[in-house]
Image (tube, rainbow, N blue to C red):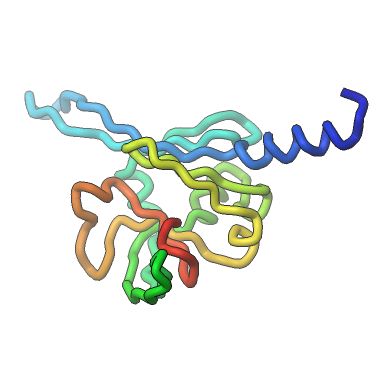
Length: 156
């Protein structure tokens, strides 16, 4: 693989796939009672020092932001909403990284839908990992978090 073009192509693919966010949940038994509670975790892959997992409860303990934003539907309709959550940049800072360091970040939903947010968006937009929309917690279909990217297509 001494060909520089092949190296660039492979590097581009690696950079595109270097960051994956996945959500999972598991049931645990609490010590205080025999009650079983669901623990939701967010896993961040592709960090320099390995994969990291953070519970949704710990994520929500970070400083949150509330943003009024517009998104654009596939039909071109502009929708306004207010989101509350954690900036992706704040989460990545916990692990010594920044969204601006990546050529693309892939988000994977619980139903296996995935999308790559390209470098152009990572460089210019604040990405919020939202747990509230319009002052209400997410519906069951959207749990545990919604990726909110202002002024971009709502597919993100």
